[in-house]
Image: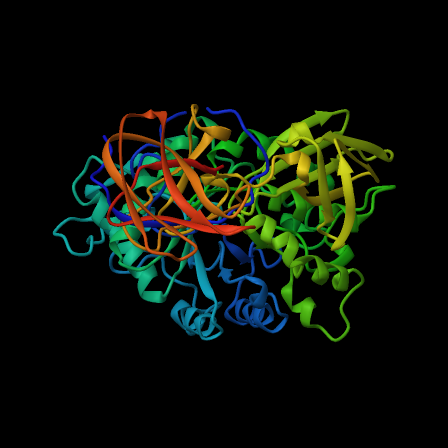
Amino acid sequence: MRPRLKKMSIVLTALSLGAAGVVAGILSGPDAQASNNGQSVRPAMGWSSWSFVRRNPTEANIIAQADAMKNSGLAAHGYQYVNLDDFFMKCDSNGPVVDGNGRWVVDTNRFPHGLKFVADHIHGLGLKFGLYVTPGIPANAVAKNTPIAGTSLHAKDIADTSKTEKNYNCKHMYYIDYSKPGSQEYVNSFANLYASWGVDYLKIDGVGAQDIPDVQAWDTALRQTGRPINYALSNNLPIANATTWKKLANSWRTQGDVECYCSGQPNGVGYPLTNWAHIAARFNTAASWQPFAGPGGWNDLDSIEIGSGDQEIQTISGVSKTDIRRTQLTLWSMAAAPLLLGTDLTLLTSATPPAGVAADKAMLFNDRVIAVDQDGVAAKRIVNSGGGQVFSKKEANGSFVVALFNTTTTGSLTVPVNWSQVGFTGSGQVTDLWAGKSGGTVADTYKATLRPGEARLIRVVPGSGGGGGSTAEAEAGSIAGAARVGSCTACSGGQKVGFIGNGAANFVTLNITPSAAGSRTLTISYTLNGSRSFFVSVNGGTPVEVPLTGTSFATVFTKTITVTMNSGSNSVKLFNDTAYAPDLDKISVN
């Protein structure tokens, strides 16, 4: 059942790239399609302590990484989260040491001033602080039968001591029986503690299908804190439950750790951090999980191991480690995955950085590539043949971004792709996004001869053969706020944008180009069951209300109105400030 819908705004700004077949479907109501907690409208960017710091986080080294994020220039390019992973809590022989309400206690030998001190420092840099938890209730809480904050209940009232939860550090965490009174209140008190420290991002680790009650409880708990907290699930979550992860969280780990643990040191500590096998394994998961990514919820491929130079990647004979690092960032960006670095950021500010760090810095600061990640569109794999792979997506301005990969490790490979596979016909203007150089006009087919492990990332703007800019797909826009992309079997391109409304912050931007200036017919394609309205404003002009009706969110309906447009690109804003609008498939102009 869809909710009554309030009023919203959506700005459409896209350059259309050709005709697409009309296709329809259903965007479920809030809480059924994706988390509506307002977080991670675009994939998170930042740093996590696990890869490099791993089992030895301290107040000093976390602050040093935060300072380096700011001082290296990473923050200016959008990297903002500084996430403290495992091993910050105090343990004894019975697991995590607990406070008077059964919650983890911080190890003051590592963090003598506490975590609020660390969070305050990070916030003072204009950055955000992330923290870590695992499901369940500590055995120490049960042994002491600690009270549950705000209730007359105690730990033994909610613990299922017949089963232990996964905890990688202290162990000794029991399941919580969520049928028992006090279980949600316990998790709420844990979330309130984290919120009081200034936590902006929470990773809950070791979860699987059996932990859906915990994932739900933490989602509820984080919301009730009143603090905006980005909610991430880890790790290797089953795709069979993808719709559940999407409903409850802002990101979910689609695989095990990207770290290879192949340094030869105890617990795999030290370099190299990863290898080609762990990166290459992400191609299939990026493809299979692609339908579940969208504003508010992202497929997490794990840490980006770029920033510590040539020591990051295990050596492979005949394969450039620079190529592998660039391929990793290319794949993650095409997947619109979170960009959370796992390397030693202090090397980016070192006076004498190791070999490869300057190249790493250039990769991480490439705003053309970052924009591919932050466009909020997860690419589809359109070619997978003989080690050659191609992923493609259509962006808000109507251009296409295409990544070509040689996933072999034994020789160069020519990887071709037809523009018809990408989504248009004719010729296209090509730009190499890594090099920032024009590739000229390419007709029908693009080819790249790639070294082993190498990637090519291009943006393509279709020429006159691509159909002009007379159609703008809603899902190709820059979608902000609660508005989000949903699958739609009957819609053009198989997607549409719903939850348009419930506040002026919920908008999408596209541009549309008519055949000529003057009075033009604008066609709105939408899905709807009932009666709602769009208000339409062209180029900031006076808005006109367009009442619409429909009988199904699985069927595409159209409405034409007459508007005045300029020559070239025109901005079209569709909004409704007092109620939800219909779900939007596309707009087109004659």
